[in-house]
Length: 141
Image (cartoon, rainbow, N blue to C red; front, side, top):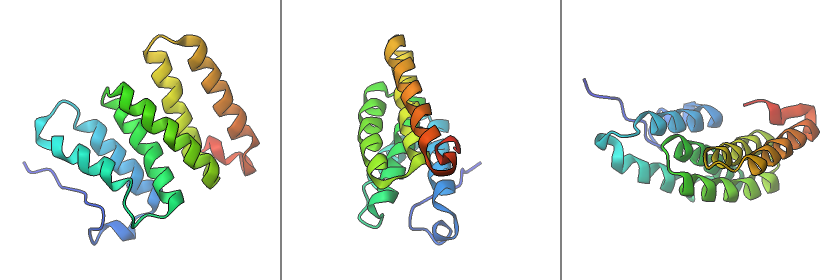
């Protein structure tokens, strides 16, 4: 059975809301962990996050989801680096949900590495920022 391919820029892509696209991409990437058939799509996904077709805030959101996908795939170093970049970019873009995603990835990353104090501090910081976001938007994800 052939798996459907989701491509940024495909005719179906513009009809989907950005969070749905980002979530679908992250889920696709995490679901292909360990399979060689989608190995090249990993690079495509992470390069797509830097596409000049995306606005700065869209790139920040895509980076946040990419960091989460990397974490799920077991790429701890890549996840931490991408989440750190995403956190800075999403805070600047005032994207509270994407900030929460990036910070959750950083907290999970620290936890998986056995750095419990760092994981707890990052989680506390994420909750504090989400609490302070307009309408508590940072808690929606």
